[in-house]
Each structure stands twice: as C-alpha cells, then as structure tokens.
Image 1 (cartoon, helix red, strand yellow):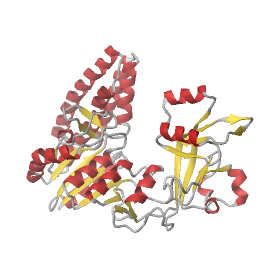
Image 2 (cartoon, helix red, strand yellow):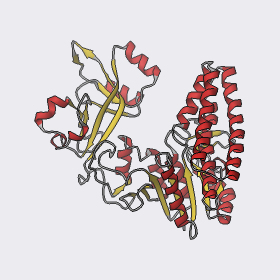
Image 3 (tube, rainbow, N blue to C red):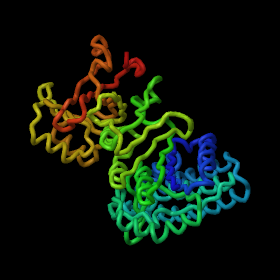
Image 4 (cartoon, rainbow, N blue to C red):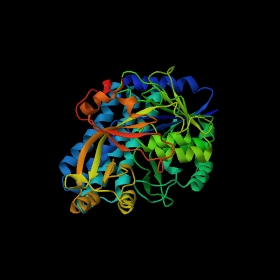
Length: 439
C-alpha cells in the first residue's frame, strides 16, 4: 500500500510531537510505502520573508541576525531531541551549506535593494528544505530508514511566483521518470510541501499554507491508498477547540462543503487542495497526531454531507479582518450593483458585502487598494475579529437579551451568491467571553 502523510508545524513544535511522528511511521513502515510531506517549522517561512524585507530596506545587520536565529532554532531543536553525534554532525554541516546559500541571496537583495517575487520564492523554499532534512535525520536516529527527496525536482508549476499553479501533465511525467524509481527502492520518503519548480527549473512556491495542496497532488499522482493530514486537533470541529471547551467533529464531508469551509476560514483546509481531490477522486483524512485513537474528519466525493445539509452547524472564528464602509451623514450609503462589482473584482477573498449597505468584511487588503479607498472617502477599520455562522440562526448563537451586550451585527444573508449556506453572520468581538456565546 502507498500512504501519503502530511505533517504540519502544529504537531512538530515540541518533543512529544516528534515522538508521535516516529510512532506513526514505525507502525506502518514495514508493510507500506510511506511518503511524508513536511512543512517548515514554527514561523520559519514568515521569518525568512522578514529577513528578505529587511535586506531590501537596507537593514542588512538585522537581516543577518534574523537569519542566524532561524538556523539557531533548528540547531537547538536537534539538541533538544538528542540526536546522536554523527547525525547531529551531518545536520550541522547541511545547515552551514544552506545558510551560506541563503546569505548569498540576502546579500544580493541588500545590494540591489530589490526583492522580486522570483527571488523571494528562492529564499522561502529553504524553510521546507531544512525542515525535511531534519525529519529525515530524526527518523534515521529512531532507526527508521528513509530518503530525503527534493519535491521541486518533480513537482512542476508555472512562473506565477508566490502563488504558482501546478502543471499536472509535466508533474506526472517527472514522477514517472524520477520519483517512482526512488519509491520502488525505498519504503519511506521524506519530502516537502509548498515548493515546486518551473519548467525551466526556477524555484517557485504555491501559496502560503499550500503544503496540503502538495500532499494532495503527490497522493493523487501516486494513486495512494491512504492520504492523511496529521494535525494537532481531532478533525475539523464545529467550533475552534482553542476557544471553546466543547466541540463536535464533522466526521464526513464532501468536496463542496469542504470548499465552503476553506473559503470562510477553516485553517485545516487549503482551498486549492479541493480542486485536486476532485481531479483525482481522492479522499483525505484529517487526524490528530497527538491523539492517534481520536476522532477524525474524512473529506471525499462520496460523503452525503453538503453545504445545504443543516446537520452541521458551524461557527468559524476569524481574526485581523478589515471592515470597509463609506459613511454619508453618519449613515451607510445604499449599495449599487456597480459598487458590488467593484469590491468583488478588487477583493478576491472578501467575506461579505451587506445586502443594503456599502460595507465589506475582508481578510485581504493590499496597500494600493487601501490608498485608493481612502482617497475615495471610504473608512477602514483594521484588526476586526468576528464569527461566521454556517447553517446557524442568530438564536443559535445568543439570545435576544445578549444582543446589545455583544454588539452583534448581521452583515450577510445572501441566498443568490451562496445558495448552499443557510445563514451568515458577523459578530463584532468587542469584549465578551467567547465561551458564553452559546447557551
């Protein structure tokens, strides 16, 4: 059997998480072919980006200091896990080589004062590369034989750097030529998510949080018998378990419902992944790597649960949103189709436009659009927190007596644009106890 396992940073951030990874792999390694897809550790990708931006702005000293801290984190992690001296030496030598390459790139950005998307992708790729090498050596330290494979040698994408689109035709050809022979000779392969290369061999990344997408493509091309995303929670929950004491698992959902959940902010699902689940008619399980016998969610084509199935009532918490509106005489102007079209065309990830007002809640707002809105007398409130309710009536969230206290604002209930969602609400998160929202 071929199994594709994706492990993210949510698990691999402490000793216990690494022990669980070894436990999962050692259980299956003897009888199966296992491909392990790894994300960058902790905040490595974000810190690499900050390093590059510092260099672009001429602050080379702080850029190099941040780069040093990234590598120190990985060295400290290796020491914490007590890798044997030989393996530790191999990893330290590897890190020195990778650090030298990165320093060269950062110095180039500093000299030119230009950070192009192409160069940025070259820099960001290092997070996955040093993490996957770490996992490969850690497993060897645990007596689990494996080989570390650079997925960008076979996963081909276009040159839309930062958000590259996979080229499945070329990727399938590369897999047949270069990946399958390695898989035939090895029971366990450690590789990377997020990264790819163009047809001409340039480094490319496929969008932030796209490691699940990489894993889905690998599983689909290999016709994997099992595809599992290992995370720190027991499947997709109806409420964020970090905020609510009691939550329920969404045991089985179909592609359509998963796509809606991804669109509205469920972090366990990367929306582009669903496209490739459909393409390969692939199912995926989302399981807790910290509780192996716990509940889990299966996303598949055969699930009967869809967006219009109100058996699942879901509350999605969203942070750091923007609210955009245009006040006229202390009131919101009446929205027109022209204005709706403008926002829809300019803000791809908008949460909502109110039915009767110019008011937008969005999680993306670039500087150029922000400046344009301000010049046109729009008001922008930043760092807004709130909730999206799917298949929820307002009375399911709070009773009427609490409405004024919690300052609830119904923003959206539009059956034309999202016909499969029965209700949609936005709640301003002013100062209230999240655990008391539900009665």
